[in-house]
Length: 219
Image (tube, rainbow, N blue to C red):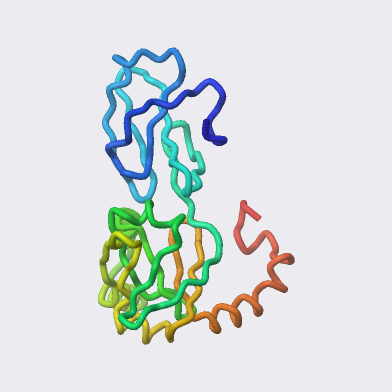
């Protein structure tokens, strides 16, 4: 059993057709005939819209942590700090625990503090949809969109879990050989090892003293 699932829910063996990294489960006693649902993947989590009153949730297999947002939706989280190395061709081997969630495809973009952001393709598509709501009459919005999309690259990990970091992004982030890959909830970030250590050192002392104003209603 998955720890996030209540005791009265048991797994169904059928994989979630909305994404290869999620599996569906149903409450014990629910009639399968009532559980004919329609699957979709809004962003980086899976949801099943159920017809007929079936009680369903979704979970991810080992290697991806799931947080249940509501009874019918979950999303995977990328966690931890890893230290792979770039090869001579600018390829990076993804941490093993990230590979399954990124296997369907990913998008690399410029990030804040000169990092590279690795988005699951579905998550980036959902983010792009939200950006469409921003007013393009605002010069700052136009600039952000141009830099974001003009510098974005799509990719898919190979069988060894390697991805290509384009030269333009390597230059932007100052990447050489030693890099740090960090999980940041719904995305992954790639940093130059020295830049990450410097950034983390400047932020950790203040982390424990963060006030409620940083993330209102959460911290």
